[in-house]
Amino acid sequence: MDNNKIIIFDTTLRDGEQSPGCSMNTQEKIKIAIQLEKLGVDVIEAGFAAASPGDFDAVSQIAQVVQNSSVCSLSRAIDNDIKQSALAVQNAKKHRIHTFIATSPIHMKYKLKMSEDEVIKRAINAVQYAKTFVDDVEFSLEDAGRSDISFMKEVMDAVINAGASTINLPDTVGYRLPDELAYMVKELSKYAGSRAIVSVHNHNDLGLSTANTLASVLNGARQVEVTINGLGERAGNCALEEVVMAINVRKDVFKNLYTDINTSEIYPTSRLVANITGVQPQQNKAIVGKNAFAHESGIHQDGMLKNKETYEIMRPEDVGVYKESTLILGKHSGRAAFRDKIEHLGFTNVSNDELNSAFERFKVLADKKKEITDDDISMLITDESLNQNKTYELTSLQISDCSDGFATAAVCIKYKDELLKDSCIGEGTMDAIFKTIDRLTKIEGSLEDYKVTSVTQGKDALAKVTARVVFDKDMPSCVGHGLSIDTMSATARAYLGALNSFVSQKTRLAKKEHYI
Image (tube, rainbow, N blue to C red; front, top):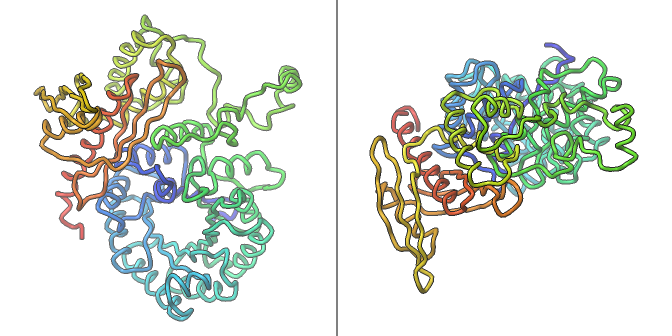
């Protein structure tokens, strides 16, 4: 093992997805996993396979497409969880099972209702069972930040002897200060020695996740568990981009330590995750925020003109942020200019079909919108890449308001080579749209969540709609995205996107006879 390398374990698709409003469908997760591999992530925690058939499906599909990164599934210290993780990652070229149990007094007493001996026994059994499926097993001591060090040493001994090769120490509630966590990690890293890699997983409840992670690295941790844009439960997780760039920029402190992250892919990855989840980093977010490399103060601008290093400790291009293209796109622009623009924006792996479809939508948009921004184009490309599965595709939508709060929606959708048309009255515009689509497709959905965001500013801004819909009570809800200047058109596209995801997922799950 190279003791200078810091292993990057990305949990955007598992812990990050647990953020309120950040759920993703299978195709979106695959898209992010492919980008994470391009970014150079060592381990991708693709999900919690036992949580639902949808999670299992997503993990297993990611396992089949990822070639270089290790694909990992989380599981509780329960046999069925571990078995589902094993089945889900079995086709990955490199795979890992990550299992855990809580070790803090408060968790053991109130949540688990187990004694220390019972916890150790459960931990041993979990690791031993996981080892019957894979060679690479990670064990986490949940709430390690509030656990007793002497007890953690007992647990570590037990699970290392059982076969765990990575021991993760999560500060599950973001409680510890950097010096406290540094002491804990130093003690436990020294205790583990060469027997196992010590990992950290820091939450940001007190805004200290990055500081805690870097302190841990300086005191022996050789794996860090992070997410893109710091996504995660409550206040989020430690942000991948912050840890990686701190190690890169402060080589005087981190000496020979390094990661295998391709830093020029940081910003494109951040934008992809933000566009898919609909959760944009705050403008002053370190590394990837819109203002991260902006300079408004006259004193700062003067310094930048004389020498950029006066106010920039890293170059924007180091993380994949490039100056705006001089090409201004409009309704008379051609495909070559459009391709040049999207490549300049970081979209280098766009297929010809995605390019052609996005270009046609761009031309339609250019006829309606006064100014086409880079954000508009980025969203068009992202929307196309995420909606390649178009079992049902919106062709046209007409809406008319009736009296007493009722509305009529006339919808035309394309199914295979057939155009399906119908209209329906509903209690409001959205209800009319959904009822008409249900009647056309003969699949009834129930809207669970609905969110509208503006891509840019102004009355002609693109509206992005995210809809979470339940089509089958025995299957998880499906997420769909829609993009249009007209909010109701975007709403119809989002509903159809969720429906397409449901149809695709149901077809795949029907073929998985091994799923239990």
